[in-house]
Length: 100
Image (cartoon, rainbow, N blue to C red):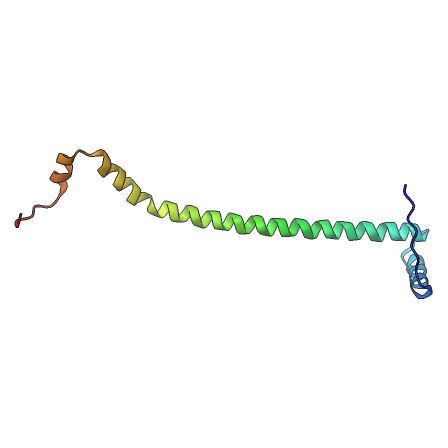
């Protein structure tokens, strides 16, 4: 284990000692270790929450884009069908124009 030295004013040192006794920690080191671990876990949880929110926003944007593409598929299928037809077939499909 690595040793870290921290200087505290008397008021804070007294508050930490009272907390150590109330919380049932054997030493101030045990209390500080637990508090720092809790802080690190909370920070990691917050980071993961932010990443999840970003992922969900990206997933929603992707779903919206997919919906837009799907809504255009019938038009695309029609265009592909027309492109595959010969010019003679296209003329047969056009309505008769009595003025031509």
